[in-house]
Length: 94
Image (cartoon, rainbow, N blue to C red):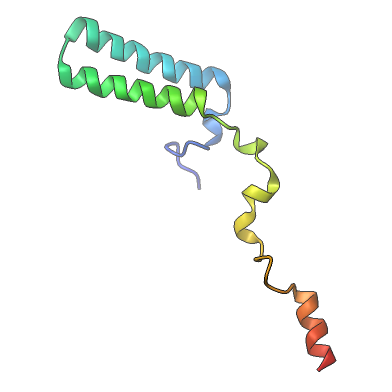
């Protein structure tokens, strides 16, 4: 089961949701910077804003657009290992 904190979660696929998340964090960082002026919260919210912008807008790759070889690479056998048919052929020859 996927969690919402997972960056590849289907919730984040629509662009408008990612833009809204980045916008909300930007507004929050602006509020802390210009209204509250507490240095700890200014740095914290600015960090959240920069991280969200980086992950959701700049570096974003849609999980369904990845090639199949990357998605199921863990399910495949290493290239050095013989396949089952090769192993069966080898056993029959003996």
